[in-house]
Image (cartoon, rainbow over all chains, first blue to last red; front, top):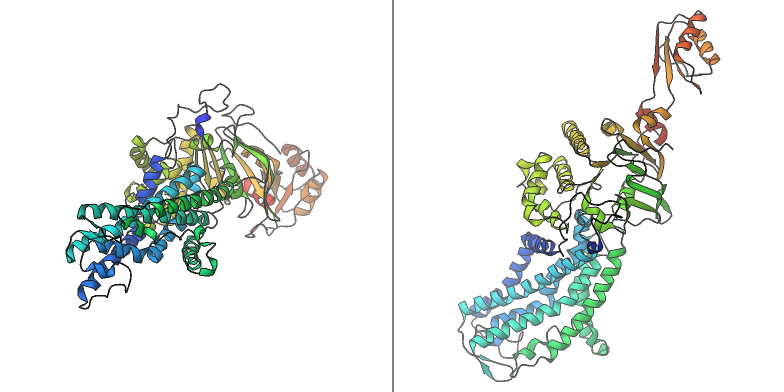
Length: 296
Length: 324
């Protein structure tokens, strides 16, 4: 798979190439192409627009209803939205994390290999030769880019609609401290980073499932169902020994980033857990994909 | 099984060489002990009915599937071990074209070209345009592939195989879905590529489509390689026969049998008598002399070679039966 050990002009090479080939590229053009193809798909754009619609709908609903939601009712932060537009992003993320974000990640990650197989492009990528490991890595990185984009879309759409519809001012944190508008933007981005990291484990699971089938819809559905199963298991107190091992366990714990001083504990635990999922499911995907007969 | 080096290569120099190549899916032997020898510079026809194992063989040659047993060398290197070094020199069309329907023809080729780590990004635009021009798709280049006809997709698939200069082209059923005009264009494209020195390995279940362009051929049947060699050799293996036009069928048949020939059953034409030459074949001049000496009124005589098609049918069976 690694062409670097090749000596094009070695006399013992039975087939010295006609011309000296340029050094093989590590795959940046392929990654660029992967990302650009992904964002050129109407489906990707539609998913991002739907995600952007969530904070917009929240803001409109709060703005248009006369009665304010009483504190403590409804999703967290919802009662604060009308007082400060900066909370729209947070309310949007909180609603998107359990279902909408895993849904879009499931579609993108489940499509990675199975989608190419069903189009018949997988064999042409491999004959190019893309290299099976390189293709897996590129597919995973592109999925991670989608995770970033999806999270940022919610945060940015929330911030824009919040600024448009509500007053903006210093933000009162969960710890009771108050931070400036500028710092609240930094906190929003930190939370976007937290949510992105949260989704990386699920992306690795989707990539692995995608190597097992030529039917992309099956891989997507399985990935999405697993994200729901994980959250259901996480809500059963009888299984609390299992909870720290579930990839969704820290999904909603980004409140730590809204304290003063900022607490990075749950960020660290979450990152470690997601890294473990990436290693395990990345290895499974590697084992499966590098030995698979491509018959699609 | 006759095996010869092509005119373009020296002995032992094969673009594709397999040794006991076998692929088993569960209990089903898709490819069974195939020893393929494709000489350098040949236009090699890989023939066989649907389901005879051609595509599975090609998948193994390209490293898409691993052989159950046996070895394959492509361009002198073992596959799939040296896949990363071999495949940049190989252009392939495998089991029909595969493209992103939501991208244009140009965008599809750009995408697949980026997957080749040796492809130079700086020349990508020019190479894509040239490949599209070579297959006559320059006017449809900006159209989305979902608007392409099957024939256009097939052309785009061939263009993909031509993105960089190749030393070996593997074209699996390249004329599928093409009209007679397109088929002719593919043939002339293959000829021009072969003239540049590219080895072309082209599979088909229709002998007539590639018979005119091949220098060599191999025939697959139910996973086995049943014949391979130059076209001349393949034709020669078939037995030659004679046709005699005479009002004295019975007498003529007696004479021919006397010469060790096998007389075919009576044909529709009462004047026509066909017979296969024996082994060793008698000299044609002697046949006519013998007929005349026996007072057979010979009104016409012809010596006929079995066509490659007859041979193909003899090797693989007649009709539409998909190999089991």
